[in-house]
Image (cartoon, rainbow, N blue to C red; front, side, top):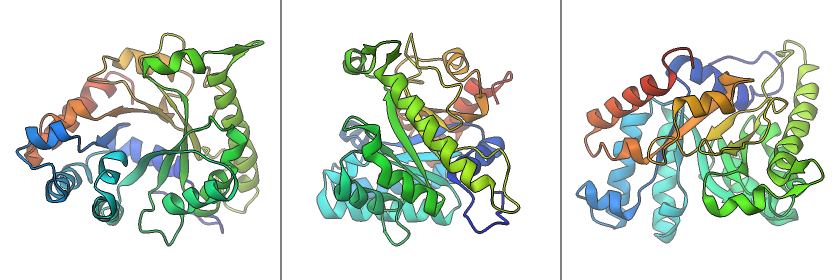
Length: 295
């Protein structure tokens, strides 16, 4: 990973691009869904959750550029589930693997600041390298998480145009010439521009840094938002089990392919529970989506 020579930590965007160059641009999900626990021969209990997570850590920590635990599947077990999530994030962190907590938090004021501190704060046991957030109380309401990400060198993925069909009517609602999704992307682009301009003034800093504020854009979408001005990472769900292809990913991220990270979960997790089989699935998926010029 690149080392910073200035007073600011190397940002998440820069670290993610560097990881993608080494491991391939793939985000692998840890989704301990009840049906997967059963499929793996595990009980739908905290012990089953822990064993599932430990196998995923062993399989993905040195093969995936980004690993995304789905918080809901831990939260349903209460404090014991959160303890497993804390351990999972810690093990991945110690292995040098970048993580994004798929928490989809969104609120205002001090409450949003509390969520930011929970997932990005230096002293939080739940801290990840990035967190997913919802902008539908207003993108500006996310300022506390943007500010903490900038301070700590961590990242944020804002839900812009998601892959679920229920979101289309809201996210494609058009005001004048822009959809709601495009407004989210454009606002995130402005935040990236502000923070990267500030960091580029530091001595020794990259003069064209990648922003730390990314967006989530479904790879299955027929009319995705324009990402050409974002200058931040793009998380692309819908690849694999939901049917999106490498060509779909390439089309959406054509202006900056190095910033696009397809998210694959079920298509890989279905290969479990053996660690070697999971690792093979990551490697095969990476080849399927990134060979032939996509990396």
